[in-house]
Amino acid sequence: MALRTTGLSADEALHALDELKANDVRWREGRAFTLTYHGGDDVVALAEQAYQRFSSENALNTDAFPSLRTIQAEVVDIALGWLGGPPGSAGFMTSGGTESILLAVKGSRERGRRERNVTAPNIVLPTSAHAAFEKACYYFGVESRRVPVRSDWRADSAAMADAIDDDTVLVVGSAPQYPQGVIDPITEIAAIAADRDVSCHVDACMGGVILPYLARLGHDIPPWNFAVDGVTSMSVDLHKFGYTAKGASVIAYRNKTLRSYQTYVTNNWLGGLYGSSGILGTKSGGSMGAAWAVINHLGDDGYLRLAAQARRAADELVAGVQARPQLLLRALPDTCLVTFGAADAESLDIFAVADALWRRGWFVDKQGPPASLHLTVNAIHDGKIAEFLADLDSSIDEVVATAAGGREAAYGTVE
Ligand SMILES: *Cc1c(COP(=O)(O)O)cnc(C)c1O
Image (cartoon, rainbow, N blue to C red):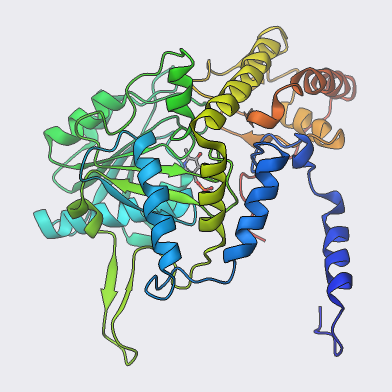
């Protein structure tokens, strides 16, 4: 598209954008089981208004914007509360789970270099740990040592212990892991890391906000946070079950020394002393302001209510999958992630089912191995599952009748 000589009016520009959105998934109606989270119309509206207040404010230098320093400090404190952060624990707001994980890997590489002189670092992680760790290894020149998960999809801590050597700088567990939604044996993983004096990151991007509330609702939640000895850092995404605007996550450390390994400072240019806590330079205050507003608007009661709604919907979906002989549930979810495949992959192409669902307006993740559909159930889906299951049935019928094959799809795209 070439730049127009005379600009559009503001109304024209906004109208054109609305038209561009015409074919997007209708997430505000609960049609997306991935990528978006919806804590109610009031919550979405507040996030958008608060974002607007800070969209051009720049968190690169909080001397100019003390508001953003306070916002970050207060949001991180609240997140540390969810994560069981001990006195002295500390963190930063980041742009998302990927940035939090990049920083955890970078920090552990730095720690290994400075404290133990490790020059060819590796990290040990289960095959279920998020792709962002792979990206971090690629970016930062760290070897990724993936260890197969157990038959229940949880990390095999004994096999992980065997994979650790003197060059290991980080051991990873997830609460829960994304693909099958189960919580790794964090106590065991943290113990093998502590045993070797190696950093241990728990990726709670998905579970960090909702797990405390599921525990309060009476669900049996295994140890998963800083209460476990040996856990040195954690990631929690506010833009997932925190229901804030996109671009908000927290990276948290057990103490400030561990945190110091992630920050960057230089004066090796003509522009003076430059420091930044994370990957970004200029950083919009929008997602920070939105996070502060939504978290304070919802409060403890609000998060408890939303957790109950999300879990009720997830339980209904799990029961629906279990009741359908053509489908196979991969695991009973520890939070609200529901993954299933075809009971007989020869007779039902599960990716074709996803395509048929999309023709009916529902967007789900295709993943594998093994070929599966992955649904992130959140508060908006409470009351929507019956309609989804009806469309799932008609989609399965259509795929079986036409012997359709599905397209592979990616969790993220590159165009
Ligand atoms: C979403 C997610 C990430 C990545 O977070 P982004 O916000 O998409 O960058 C990492 N780990 C887990 C377990 C996740 O669910």
